[in-house]
Amino acid sequence: MDRGYIILDIIAAAVLICGIINGVSKGFLKTVLTFAVYLLAIIGAALISNAFSFQIYDEYCRESIISAAENTIINTEEKLKNAISEATDEELSSEAEKNEDYVVQQDLTNPEISDKLNSVLEPVFDSFRYELDDSMPVTVSKDMVYDDMKTDLFRFITEGNTRAAAEYIEETTVRGIVVKVIEYVLWTISFIVISIVGRAAVRAVLAVRSIELVRSADRLLGGVLGLFGALLVLSAVVIIVKLIIGITGGIGFLSEEAAQNTILFKFIYNLFDI
Image 1: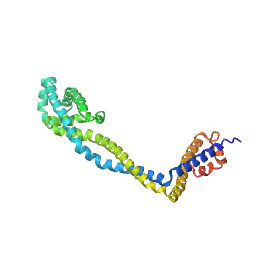
Image 2: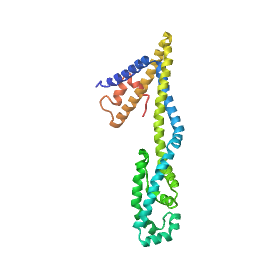
Image 3: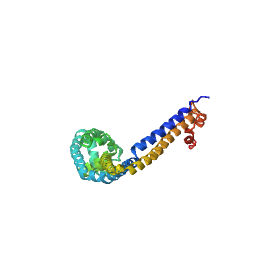
Image 4: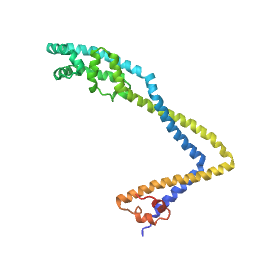
């Protein structure tokens, strides 16, 4: 019989031995406290980023973004007037004057007026889009969507309310993206700071290991903890082996028969039934 299954026992023994040695060398206190520091850093960074990202955006970013958008809209407003006066024939101008209130109130639902105005205003809005991209944060420009904004922006500009148009752009296309970027940056900074402070605290606590009795107990418990970690690693290995056997039906030492012939590996292997 092929005794290749011994490889599985060798892998299991190597993982267990390495886990125990690593646990003894690091010690129980260092392992547990280091894990606690990183867990605290993850949770703390999430809480801080969620709590302050909107506040930072509103206090330091919102007004400048609205101002930049408003300046672009003011420039576009002039272009709109020029485009309408130059590119619209008398019939369209007359029809637009007669239907001005209707167009503004009904969001350009009159198909004939809407089509004619769109053909005139399309180049202006394309220019507006590129100019607005240049004035917005770099993280926003590629994600901004303008097609659904044209009617609303035209209404705002027709009413002369450039501030409302700028606030509309900020609220619908910029705010969510920039806040998310701020949240990621804040999370990263918070995680790094908490980790550094926490690791310094761990080093201070580990000073107690200078006491011989504490050091011995710490190494013993560290070995136990390392053994537990090694068992978790072996559990992952067993799951992978079972998946391979399930897919292939068993090849070489990666077969059901080989696993059951092992001495050490089969105890963990038989704990899983997938």
